[in-house]
Image (tube, rainbow, N blue to C red; front, side, top):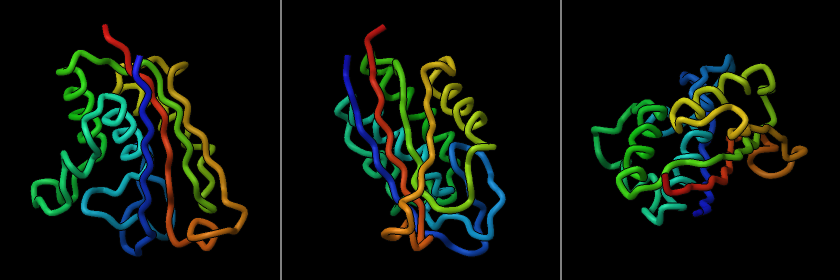
Length: 157
């Protein structure tokens, strides 16, 4: 059994879609980034890579590489899963938290869990997605951006 932790942050930006957990969420701003800036899927991918001791998402999909510009983070997550499988690991579970003030994510959590579960070939009872505010504190509290954290376990088949 291996354990990994992932963390990601992106700032808000006008004229971009807000995509979290592979779900487009209505909001006046999206997140800035080289890819679609899905902080939740990025944190999950980093947790998987960390558990397998394979570095971080930026090492595999650098923002200096035009190939990844505008990339769909669900596709990146599928690639990460295939990469850890090459080292004979499979995801066992994931627990993730999104930190943001607005918008409220409760209506979208089930779809996020389903997207993550599909990418990791996990049943929904092995995927947890939560959201919380920072009670107005810090960059999240000032609504400058969104952060996400994820913990996962890997096992050998």
